[in-house]
Image (spheres, rainbow, N blue to C red):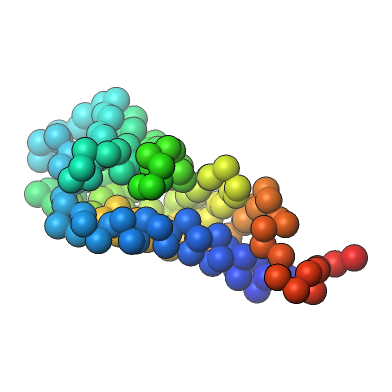
Length: 164
């Protein structure tokens, strides 16, 4: 059963990431600039991230952010809303309790529970990593996936492998 959940998680993850990876080709050089001075904490920070065409790619909402050094920011109670690059509509939402972001690589890591939601699934895990340049994600630990539109995940040949 765990292998089925992991396979479905990978399918859902890939489905949500493929379009984002294609759109991210133009933004490989983009760096996210968080307006937090080294050694200071900022409360209630909202950072929109737009692509070269001015379209919203994602938005960070942080309860607090502390710049630890030139390239590392510690963030608490963070919501990252990603946007579909074809439609411009909200896509996946990532909720993190405590995480760190490397500003050189734009990689966000957490060893605490992560929750990712989209209109067709909800995924929780014990930790994870999110590359905000490529929008690739990796979750670790106990993974729980709920798929809301299960019929779209059935094989083309019908209900093979589905419980009756």
